[in-house]
Length: 254
Image (cartoon, rainbow, N blue to C red; front, side, top):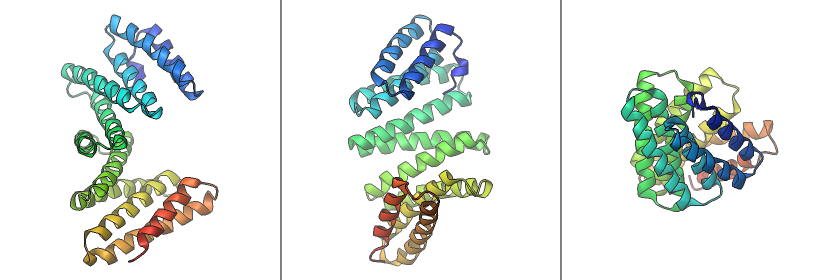
């Protein structure tokens, strides 16, 4: 979120204080600070600040697994974001706000087991970033956000056996991460994201039909190769170890 747009100094101090409390793990104190900041933002009609405050609070509540409260907060953030967009519909920052919030809502709803609403949130977020990237195709923030959404959306579609849609979404994510790696081939984050998406695509193809088995195997083997290379560089990384185990499980039976 672009806190540079927040001009009220008291609000800026409160927001900075809350962010510092979050970094220290003092989530309850951060929520208290954000409650005070929200009151200040509403009284001063600082809509940009109010959006950031609501989005941040939603993230804290989600991290604390208070899903119902987090969802309610994200919904309020979307209402405020809609007000911002009504005033300035072509503003890329505001569109990015909405895309990020919808993506977070999708993750939350997926955690709650509400797959239909999660899919709707991901689809809306994807649409926003597709438009943003049409206007600004080299924007790394928009590209990264789009890749993350597609990855999560593809995982959900896989879980709900929507394999045709999952294939299309995951291939779009692979295109984004492949381009990132072409630009920064040594970036471990991009390598991890691409390998995860390749593994997901391989699993999707495996489930679709026996005729796609060879294609599935190629994607899974490529994912495994990348993950094992990452593990050589980061031998204590548990997430990479888990990813390797999952990819090997997906390779079984092919």
